[in-house]
Amino acid sequence: MLRFARSLYPLILSVTKNDPERGHQRLIQTLKKVDAMHRHGFAVAMEQLERTFTHSDLRLQQSCWGLNFPNVLGLSAGCDKEGEAAAVWPALGFGFAELGAVTKHAQPGNDRPRLFRLPQDQAVLNRLGANNEGAVAMAAKLKRTWEYYPRTIPIGINLCKSKITPLDQAVEDYVFSFQTLAPVADYFVVNVSSPNTPGLRSLQESDELPRIFAGLQSANHWQKPILVKISPDLSWEAIAVIIDLVKEHNLAGIVATNTSTRRSGLKTKILPQTGQPIEEEAGGLSGQPIRDRATEVIRYIYQQTGGTIPIIGVGGIFTAEDAWEKIQAGASLLQLYTGWIYGGPWVVPDILQGLGEKLAAEGFSHISQVVGSE
Ligand SMILES: Cc1cc2nc3c(=O)[nH]c(=O)nc-3n(C[C@H](O)[C@H](O)[C@H](O)COP(=O)(O)O)c2cc1C
Image 1 (spheres, rainbow, N blue to C red):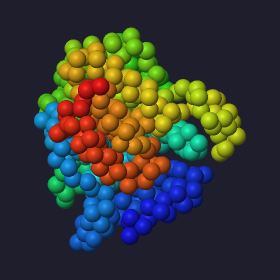
Image 2 (cartoon, rainbow, N blue to C red):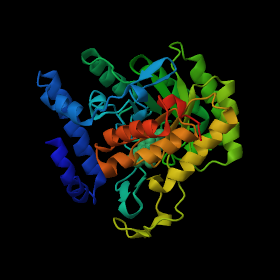
Image 3 (cartoon, rainbow, N blue to C red):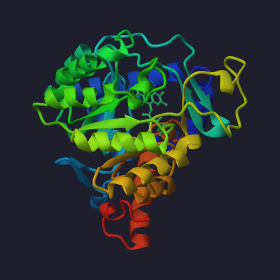
């Protein structure tokens, strides 16, 4: 039945095109129902998802920071901002899931409309502004989830600064969320690269960044892997400085990349929902337009570090080819979001199957041999 639904997916996309945020809320509600049914003894929906979307291939398993990833393809931050569907992501075939962004304080995010699809460009523009219920609420939700479900894939949490917290007090904000959520997740990502929290990206190039890393590591009694997520719009010099800080503070890796504020080369000139030129619309661009830049950033980090720092590669992955390119450039793990919106959930097993075929065609026996192999 779910295979048949694939032919209807373009219709779902077109019905939700004018209000993608509402479409997204419906999706999360549906996944929550699958979870609720399972908890009430009706496992049929979860099992149906598993049968349709999981793709098991030992060659695509990855091991990083002492964690076992059943496959290299994860859900990127921003899709499940409050961890509401944490129990269901494994059934949709993901090898790991990054929840959030979460902030210390609950916050409503920016005014609507704040999420737009740019189908001509296979892109999304978002200026959600880290809308979430706060770290305490998320921790309670995840605690309840793990009381019922075993954790079958690594779960990451994307940490962001609350809008109301001044930039020079960012450390305390990140540390609070980290300490609150450390018991219920496997790895953490310091998000200093979202364009939708005023001033946040300036942290990437300020003296606050080493203080944030130091604060988190000294609070890290759990010895959780802590990564930093960077913007595709940084200069090579700024990325080099961040690499040095990552080494100095013993961070576990780098997530490359977040969304971009650049608008060059887009086919979409006017945003239909607002009637404004795309250059004048605030927000972060994701999907196909950032694919090559994200890969360049991955390649640069891999080359600068000689492959010693694990990279989660993200940005514009739609196909197995896109995924392969990022692994060859140096990514040990991958994430996607926009490609999943446009292609539907079938994209995950398609990409994993394609990666398996590439391995055989190129004469590799395991995906880890491909990392940085270009
Ligand atoms: C609607 C939306 C919300 C996002 N929210 C977050 C977020 O809260 N934190 C974060 O680090 N990245 C966020 N991102 C960025 C994604 O995690 C990812 O880095 C980026 O979209 C590039 O990947 P993609 O091209 O596969 O979407 C968001 C992206 C989208 C499209």
